[in-house]
Each structure stands twice: as structure tokens, then as C-alpha cells.
Image (cartoon, rainbow, N blue to C red; front, side, top):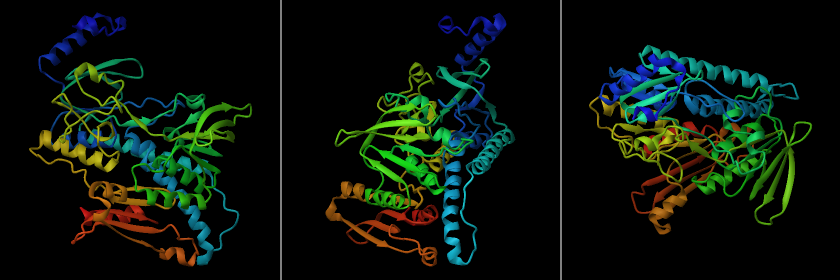
Length: 475
């Protein structure tokens, strides 16, 4: 059995002996750790810290494969490094630009023209993210969780082999193993020049220089959030979308989000797909695309092309097949039950990598904590994934909880649904004479008394905070 897995001759015989004896110990049931967590993102860290708090011996392995453009980052996962945190800070930068425009209505004399300095913003955001990376490492140390910066893959059901940047291999074994590796942005590798010249959300927040005139490809919330803040800080931004915006969200709300973005300067190319990207001698990118309806081709020149066409779970290099962990062949996600258990009883999966879970940081954190409590704290509490509120941080924020109108109709039938809705004008829009024609709220209810609220949708400033309050009521 051991002969099939050569660990390389570079270590000398004593190294090989150590690895072999380690494997034998592991197979004999003596493990290094009570819990090994693969992935140092929101869910993985929460699970590890909770287990350590409950007095267990815990290790976390985390490794960031640089993006095709070479971007890499520290401990903390997508949300901290290339997701919610930097996104929301750049969204805030864009909102401040809008407030400066409003300021003179409120008596402030602001010198014109107002200029935005990408470099300054990026440096401040990146420094904050680095402080969070450091904070996570300190927290692990304080809780006596061992942290390994290695790329792990399974070699048997209780053991992983981790490879460090230097090529050094480490074997780790545990009674329980949690996979919390999250996902990475998808590249359309079939499009010429996509990989060489495009960037993704893995790169945008770590750019030292302004992306300039940007083409965002995709209509996901990532696409619209990025296009929104790029427009908001004054960059010429175009969104190219193949079909509908914000798939999976309420479509009436989604079209209002787009309407607002369009009226504030974001350009949209609807029903188009890119076919080729070429780099011009001056460094700019020439993009060719096709209109899906007419079949006509067109081209445009951009400084940056940002792909936001979905994400792929990080399961390919874990050697899951070898140990019998089942994945969904369609989307590569790990199949789990309500207790986060995979097809192997002591191997678990939480967060974005698990099939059928919302790709949201707070749910991953809670799932991680609850899993640790079930394993080591005599708890049987399961994560409740019903009515989880979420917010899309487009320039006009969209918050929702519960069912979209489409889902409510599909579940209960049109005749059993009642929708209450209203346009409204936020007070802060009045003096500044801002257009409030997309500020809108709707409540999707069952028609029969007591008219149970199935879904609530809010479009307007501070949607995240508003939705959070309503979510409590709906819950």
C-alpha cells in the first residue's frame, strides 16, 4: 500500500521512515488531532475556534493558490480578502462620492471638481484586510489552534498530506475532518484571451492602480456590485450580460436595481456574449462580442475586463474520490446531509463548498460553530437555512428575506398570493433633490388570513440594516 505513494527521495531514508510510521499510526487509529479543518475561511475558522474552546486539539490548514493574474492573500477566506469586506468598503467609497454631490444642498461648500484617488482607497482597504489576516492568526494562537499554511489533499480517510510553498510535505491525521475550502471565480477558458487578459473578484480589490475603463462580464450580484462601485468612483463601466440579472433573486426587484444603475451611468450590453479578447500594442484590451439575438458582432476597447460569471468549489485537488467523499458531478460541490456529514461518516463539509447551502459568510460561521458543538459539546442543534436574509450591495442596496414573488407563485399558486408594495422617498433624498423612483418595498404574503409573510424585498439606502430587522420578525 505504501509503495503506491512515493513521497520523493529528496528527504532521505529517515524522512520516508517517519512518513511510513506516521501512516501506520494513523491507520492504527492514533490521530494527531481531534479535529482537522481544511480551509481557513469564515466557516472553517469558526468551527476550529469553537472546537478549541470546547477543549479539543485542533489544526487548521489553509493555502491560497494565486489567481491566474498572480494575486494572493492571507488567512481569512474569500469574505475577508476578496469578498464582503473589501467590496463593502469600496461600495462605501462610492456612496461617499454621492453624498459629496448632495452636500451643497445641505449648505456645505465643496470645492469642484471632486476627484477620486484609487491608489489611496485601495491601500487603505488592503491595509484593513491585512489587519484582519493578522487578527485571525492571533485568535488561532490564543485558542491554541495549530495553523499550517499548506495545500492539503487526502491520502486516507483520516489523513491528509500537505505541501508547503517550499515543497516540504507534512502528514496530519485527525478523528474528524471538516472541509471548508469555499470556491473561486470561474474563468470562461473557451474564450480566447480570457485567462491571459481578464481579471476576477480575486484581483479587483488588490489592484494598485485604477482599473480605468472596465467591462464587467456577468449579471451575478458580484458583477453588479463591482460595476456599481466602479461607476460610483467615476470610472467608465459597462456590464455585459448574457441573459437575466441577479438570477435566483426577485426579478421585479432585479430590474429596478438595473434601472437605477443605468440612470446613474453604468452602461449595459444585454443579450451579448464575448467571443475574444486581444491585447493592443498600447496595453488596452480589444473585446469582440456577439449579440445573441441578431448574431451581429461588435467590438470595444477597455482597460480592464472583469469576469463575474459564477464560482467553482475548491474540491478538485483534495483527492476526495480516493477516500469515498461524494460530490455532485454537475457543480463539483460536496454532498452533505442536514448534519453536514459527507458520504464518509467522520468527514464533514460546510460553507460554499457544500451542496445546497447559501453562499453567505454568516451562515457558514453559524454552521461551523454548530458543527463543533454537535461533535464536541453534547449539542444536537442543526443550522436552520430557512429565511436567511441577504443584501446585494449595488449603488441602491437590495435586501431580501424569504421567497421571491416567482418562488411564492411556484410554491403556492398565483391565486393564493397577495403582494403589498409601495414606492417611497427616503428623507435624505428630499433636500438633495435625489431621484427616488427606484426606492421600493414589497411584501409577498399568503392571501388567506392571517396572511403569513413569505418574502420581504427592500430597495433603498441601508437595505442591509433594514432587512436584518425585518428578518427577525419573519423568523
